[in-house]
Image (cartoon, rainbow, N blue to C red):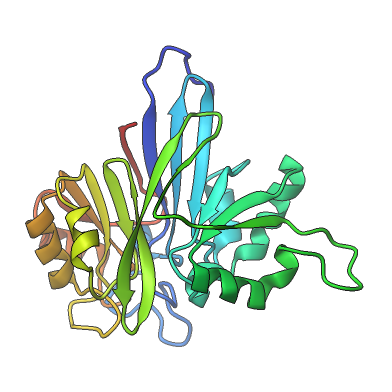
Length: 272
């Protein structure tokens, strides 16, 4: 895509996947309450692409490497990445990591990967070959693993993307949400500490976990998400990490006007 040098910069968040840990349909249990005829109900595992586009080009940041990453990158026509961020180390957010390899080969450069201390430790335990060449291997590492500070700026051809890490609880485990300027993304959350909650007020866009209607020990329910939205008052909100209980059309019908369910491939654009 050619971008005019005079065009104002924009920030786009693309939903690569909005499904719960098993996706929709789910192996062995199928579609649940979701209508299989509605393509918005076919959900890959959670991941988003954050892009800043300006006259200089495009800066592209990936959040999480889901097990569906190959198809997600192909569908979004991703040609390069400036960085990868991780929310936490669960399999549904990390196990597509090796599908970054073709991008590294094309770019001829390792991709910077940012994660908190625990996630970095678990990534190196599970996927150490991605970060340094194992003994006896001829394959070079593909990723540059870096500490994730509370705030940083990720740069690229499209200009800077500000990133703020927002600690949350995911059941008994710690996880992160991220704020990108006036947008925030929290895919796996059961409790938001006060300091992180304060950073969610008055956003242009909030993408928030809403697993199902009934309570869950490690995720927000739909009512939990709607209560947060009512409190923090984003201009618009999107519900993600949706289980097989939640049919797209049926859920959309009962949500407030400024709130919609996510679907794979959804793009949301803001001023940068």
